[in-house]
Image (cartoon, rainbow, N blue to C red; front, side, top):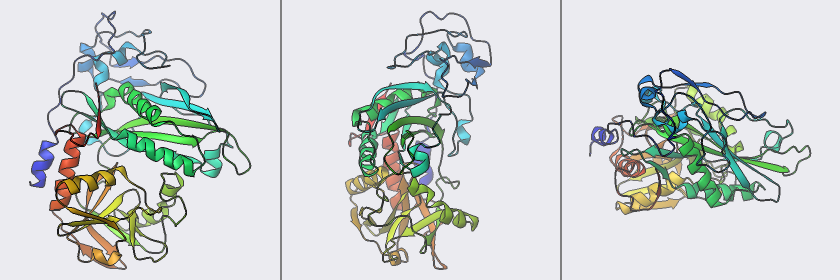
Length: 427
């Protein structure tokens, strides 16, 4: 299938959905205002309410323009407004066709706390805003923090699909054990993600226009001066609508191999999604971007010849019917998109090898591509290593990357049957 044809199938038309199940039956007045204040309980830890600009056409069909208390469908959530419960909540007034990968403040975030040695419980939705931390918080002083990333997609029927949220929950739990932190259970994690997405449903882009990026955080929020695990922990989820991660979109990206600076070391934390892993790549990444490259491809720190990963995504090398990717050995993040692409590739008849991949194999590869939650599948147009540039084509996706991208994204968006049982549907 040609790349243009693939992309065309991923951008169906979108129609405003009917009023959601959160509608208030007592509402009767027609909406006429362009700006609508959203009321919520005052909390000292969060910033004041903001006025959210809503689409006039959507507001005209909303059931009410005034705000009052309604019974919340969420545990422990306080006051929700008719503006949230009406049809107006189904689509925010932004330019959906111009989404990049940046933060757009949404309506709600989720928060849950526990003490060291305790269990998480009594999480709740809160208005999105700033949070307050003690200057001696463990996350600020000693980097005791983890994060996850996953996406929600809107289907043509208006329902929303999550992609493998239980895998993110399991990875967070594994990372928490390494970082001496308590973590939510898998069920708590998944339910929190569901509640947060439904509360921000109007920020899920129309089909084919992007996705709702979901960012769960786990951090040592308690104050600690001496080096030790924090006494208190906060689990928080916020969301933002996003488009493509790289400025090139689905066009090929250009990488440079970094052979002096390293992302991770054996026995370190490269295999978990701790916050410090990402700050460590900024120096090399900034230098690469200043020279016109899209990102950096790292080598192992022992032999300095085996591929590891790009700053925030995994790498795959294609030769004939064989797809090779670096094995998970403690220095490479076990990406969920990586894991999914491996399974999809094998189901499509490819031979996938997880092993040590020498940098020299890039020289005669047919294709190279990256995978990650943010990028999904990104084709690599060229790689530069010690001054030598190897190109893999400039016309977009290679045939293999295109095939895998098409299958995975169509599954994520609900355009094909989910025979893998990877998606969770919300209505």
